[in-house]
Image 1: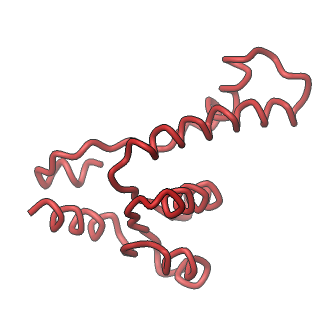
Image 2: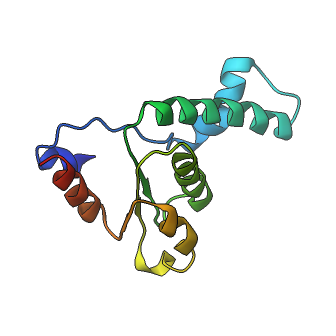
Length: 127
């Protein structure tokens, strides 16, 4: 996260797979051609979920960024996984999603509206 590096925080960040085409095709790239769309999605989902599980297990904390340009259901699933694994969770969500994410925000350790606010939380932790 560029903002954290700019503040001199020595943290390592990993991210969800944001290359949508790769995320959709990874099952067939690894396992070979699948007999239909359902199986193609299942193969990709298995590998993507495995990736998320491994990275989540390694994480000391999780930041879930909700925004109009991101797929909300994937972010919600990752945030829920973090909660279920007992990982400290910061949710970043804009004002227009307050109502839609109220239960999830209630389960998070911290909910903020901007990336800058999340970085300030990280700064405070690292003082």
